Amino acid sequence: MTGRDGMVVVNVRELLRKDYVPALGTFAAGVLLDIVGLTDVWDVPHIEAPESWHLVPLAAGCLAMLGARRHPMLALAAGTCAFAADLVLGGSIAFILVIFDLLFSVGRFASPRARAAVTTAVFVLVGTVSVVGGLATGQIRIAVFLVLQLTSVLFVPLWWAANIRQQQQIGALDAERIAGEAVVAERAAMARDLHDVIAAHLATTAMHSGAALAMPPDTGRDRAALQAVRTSSLAALEEMRSMILLLRAAATSAASSADRDAVLPGGLDRLPDLVAAATAGGLRVDVRTGDVPDIPVVVAHTVYGIVREALTNAGKHAPGSEVDLDVRRAGGRVTVTVTNTLTRAGLDHQALSAGTGLWSIRERAALLGGELTAGRSGDRWRVHASLPTAAA
Figure 1 (cartoon, one colour):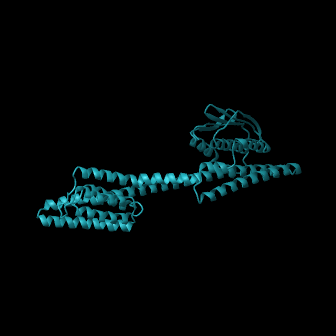
Figure 2 (cartoon, helix red, strand yellow):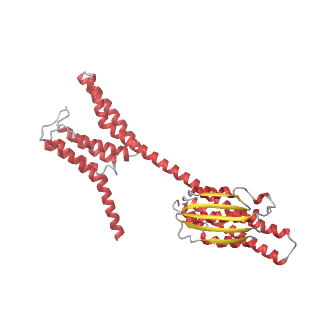
Figure 3 (cartoon, rainbow, N blue to C red):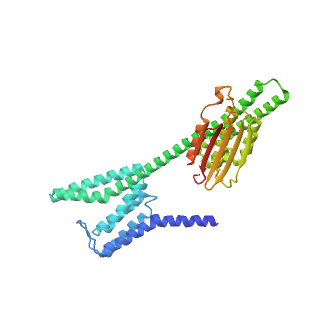
């Protein structure tokens, strides 16, 4: 009941603002113009009547304005009849305001066919009256004056309405274009996330299987390697499934960053899983994580991606190395530092390194307004990122 009442209040306010206020304002302005004597302004045959009679067709024209938004052609027809009655009384400047508004409403709200018909009729009327007026008076200046006067009264409101419609169409096209570009950018980000996630899991799978194949058969060790391969494969399938579901949803509606972060796994709460997987792969990881309370989801997702990429690279390029992981918050920034000792290159196939991992996490940090550096520091490899929390 409350919602229904609230909706009624909103509709009444919109009706007052869009229909009643212009009509009442036009009537009030017309009354003032009639009071100051701006009546009997047209040099046409008319009946002699008190000036107050002009208020009757003016009121009828203002009533027609109330329906101009919903039925512009009917309102214009009613206003034309009221104008004819006002012309019989000698005409008034006040009724020009009514005609102007009714023609503007036709230009804004009528169908294209109706607008074309009214515009054609206006041009025919302007031309006919100008020629007849010029021939009747024998003066070209009268014809020119009539053209300028009638054009300002009859054609300007149609032109003004057409200009507003054009601006609205341009705005709608711009909004559609921006929305399309946002969808394309969002899907590109999803594809990048999917690549990083799947590449990391596949690299882990390849390293475990490669390590098992490089050593003599051992039932216990081989079963542990198979278990690690299975765990990594299932995690890759789960994350791929989540991404595919999100992409299918985005086919019917644009997916937001919040939607992506909600579907894609990966946050500070899953850092222990990354450490456990890295340890199972032979790395010796020392974790030092400070207090990181209530950081935005997009920042947490980026931190997860950076740690995942750093640990994956350590496992690929320096198997069995010692890794130090440090994640903490200092003021308005979150810092991530991953260092590992340098050992003999552990890649046994070039497909294990696509060369895009560091570029991807560096781009993610830059998108948040942060920075990421990666390179050799003494006898260790160091990845360091600093991310602002406010940027999210």
